[in-house]
Image 1: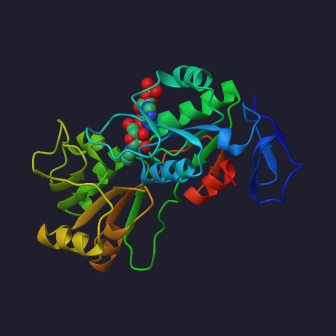
Image 2: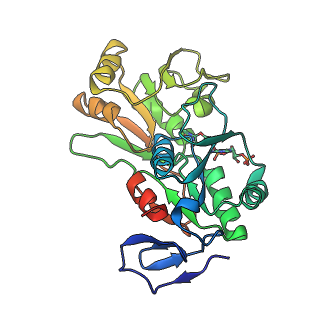
Length: 279
Ligand code: NAP
């Protein structure tokens, strides 16, 4: 099981002690299996995000053995550097078995902030095996002057609120939750990487695209389709669509992030995660 001690470093500092594992904020979290230097560590990154790809690239360049894991949701995924495996593990027990079989020293949960199931599984598998867990989570967005935001807890709440705010909707919540909007009487422009599947709204245009998106491109989309309300998840990261909505005083329904287990060491940048693993 993970051991926590407060004997190393200053509060707020992060570094890695090759003999004692990951040292974070003055605490040692677990211990590396191999007991040798950072270059011998085996790291499993739960991915599907640009941050996960960037971390895999950074660690690979440092000579660290990285395995990136993708869920297999998209048919043409952007592949990170290093080894890649695709598909589920079979819940937390399956992930724990994989950590043992592959002799993983550090587990990084760099999945999307709304991928709550795999994040819970990562926490459970790390607790059972004692493998140190680092959560890499980009910060969420915050409202700025000129924004007209309505925060909701989940997609169903967004669907219920929509008719009061507009009738030409730009929906950027991904294809998986589109069914929540199937019975809303409005026109939808939905953007996703893969085509959505029924149930879907009756009046729907789909734009298949993958970010990051430019501000000029977002302005054009909003104008061309006469968008009067935007629905998005609080994913964080590039925010061109939010700037474009602000400029036009378009209301935004912002779906809050699901709660995550507070136990793991959480960092918000690729550089911080890389420093923890390979200082
Ligand atoms: P989820 O609901 O949290 O996970 C559902 C199941 O999918 C998990 O129990 C796991 O199956 C498998 N899975 C998820 N991520 C995996 C990974 N990185 N490697 C291996 N198996 C994984 O996940 P989701 O919301 O469907 O997201 C799936 C993937 O898409 C994630 O990797 C995430 O980073 C990426 N993504 C999600 C969103 C979003 O809005 N949710 C947006 C952009 C990208 P087993 O239980 O069998 O292990």
